[in-house]
Picture 1 (cartoon, rainbow over the protein chains, first blue to last red):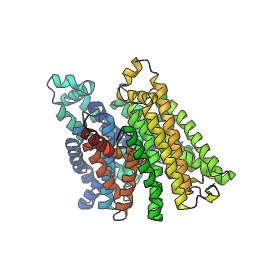
Picture 2: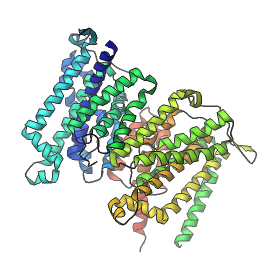
Picture 3: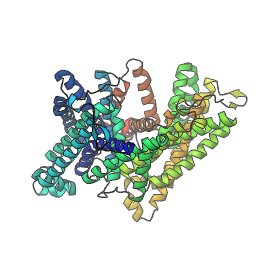
Picture 4: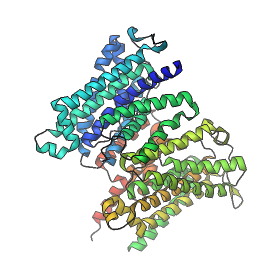
Length: 287
Length: 313
């Protein structure tokens, strides 16, 4: 029982990281029809910027509050200068372009921070464990789950309740008509891209204390995040949320119960979902 | 010169150039062998990407499985490399037919993810099935076969065998693309719906393309095993599939010889830049980005367009 509870907490915490990645991936795809393979790079950049800020200020909270800013700056430049030129070309070219960027970012990180595994220190308040109903859980993981729930809620409120959110939804449904009714779609594109990049960078920051920081962490999170997006359905925030939790749990329990087949589990899950529902669980069937 | 004479001149020049390679010394010969092996691999991938319009991110599966088959049969059962070579190609083709059967049900990103997932599943098998594959250590102790009594341990002979394989694959792909079947593949790339409306069973032809590409990747994998006499799970990793995509795009997707040129460029960059700096992938990335942005038809595609434009018609 206790073992199951521990795995549940771990699985949910991993699910939060996947959600912070896949929410942006899915929104960017839904709105702009852009597949951003470099999304994992922003997860990595966010984590390393957080490391630098923590070193400079000595505070995890300052790192969490600020690390997304330089990452978003890099992302906006990438979108304005490079990706925008390829809007009229197909998915294939965007995949290839952003794939090229993954090489550039990973080597830049290696140049600046070296290839060793670094760690982001947990603030004192969140280190240690608490006992919840007879089960001992690390405080940081509980914080992560609460944080993920909060970000998910804010994102949902933003999309469903705010005026800008309504514009984003209009853009996802039909960008052409949205332009026709006076929505500044290029600006909206840039904003949503920045939002997605920011979420990935924050994801990297909060992942820092549990996953560690190293060049290559970008791909390590990118592949499961893509699996989440494909399972949840490209362009669906709800799908990204449900599939993140699902994949996080399957992966964690898989590793705990069938360590020999840990790598298999989520690939297998994706294969099964795609073969029965090619558009994903909540997909809009456009991919 | 008419077209036929030009074509023959091109083949003769290529064969003469390849024949002279072993005179350049053993380092250059090994590098040239590696280039040709990956050229075959990249050309086979281009059949799916450049000619059928599907971005596969799991092509390493077919390259790797063929190499594994050959080395496993040789090391564990003592089979000759030649029989292993044929078996490897057959296994690759069968595997491509099976993976393709499932993957072509989806397209776009889900296709990319599915092909990658299948390749990664195979890699997991190669890591876990230690008794047969050697796990992460890889499998060594493979004895290269002999040809007319000469052992393929000889660098020059290795190169010639690989070069013959390369020329055969090149010839086969050129014939295939020029054939009615090749036109159907290109039709699917250009406009899948129209092909469907015209009555072509599009799915079946995608599967045919995927299977042929898998078999040809198997040729590359078998030659890789002859060259290195060793396999490890690295050759099933998605990053090898990614390298092959880079080769295809650099050289020119949708051209037969382009990916071979891309393979040569990639391996030259790798060898030249990595001897000066640890960050050679950065340069690969920069060159690749520049190519996607400004030279989407690839180096060979660009050259070919120039040649066509110059010719008064």
